[in-house]
Length: 449
Ligand code: PEP
Ligand code: MN
Image 1 (cartoon, rainbow, N blue to C red):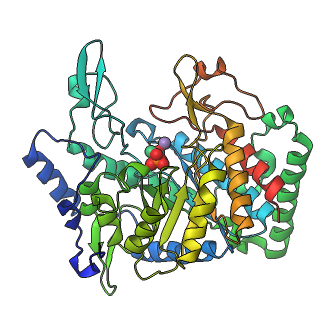
Image 2 (image 1 turned 180 degrees about the vertical axis):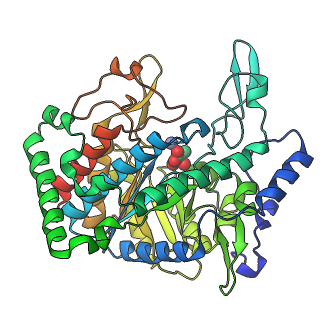
Image 3 (image 1 turned 180 degrees about the horizontal axis):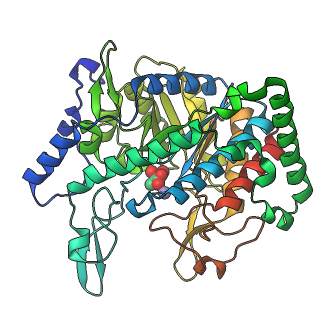
């Protein structure tokens, strides 16, 4: 099939393609009214920021920069709170500082937040005790409680999602502009957990060294240390609910093309990556960099089709392939995909999502992931890319700045019994603050340049 040309594209051309994972709203008039209002609300990001992220991604493609993308599996409206936002930002900033220092290069920070409100589900409905209700599809669609009222898709939630994304971004930008002081004082990091780790001495040395180099540079540069007090932070979410994405897709004065201004970096989930599907159709027409999740079931033809469709002009910084194979499968599947992309001469940024291929259930049916599997998949990704002359350009993680107990292992060696203490995710299990920082430290202790 010849890919359609960009002239055929417009923000609603996806409606001519099969759109999976979309909710069925009970009232089309209320939906249209909400979308109309959404299309006039101010955008959440600007086209300049989107272009700047593209330029950074282009450098990461060439191995000159590392991308740290992370945040919740799904944000909830209730978690749009100052403490949760600040703690998540703090862990991401601290991880990025560890990576800057250990990998000896710039890091691009991308939050999986300010719009990560829609979730793909394995079934459209859910049955409990003989009652069948629509599945929970994320707070942008409905609510998780198992009642008829909660599960009914409500278009007003589209407006609420936009508002909470704006509040999240506003607070994030404010914290960053204000210099979010923790960056300069690694000695204030909550590092009690370090004592539990086999690598305790190594971690402490690294944290001390980061503090020393920051203080040294501050002495040299005084208060004008912009590189460290002013950091960029970008937003990302899964572009799942296409009516929401399209309503925020705009043309910008004096620039050609269309921008999705609800986020800097939308990605296509693994379940919605069909070549002729609506999600690929929507994403092929926007200027934003676009990610696509690829799992063990993807074949070479499909992957090359995605490269051609999503980045027909082979532009740098445009297409991000996020592999999520699982620690036990990556060595079998990734090499042929890298090879096909190289043979085809496609420019892509490779990220590793070590979360979604490593999900498992405990004996009591709780969804979890093992820290060791997550770490193993990251290390294998670095090694497999390097072996083929390719670059792993970054990682895509599910994490929180809170002290939750959702993933097993880590320095404190969380066990199945610990999970009950603070399991808060409605969807996938996240690394907690300590596990996330430990992951960054583990990455640099093996991949240090
Ligand atoms: C996710 O990122 O939460 C997700 C559903 O991932 P994937 O599309 O890779 O399964
Ligand atoms: Mn997830």
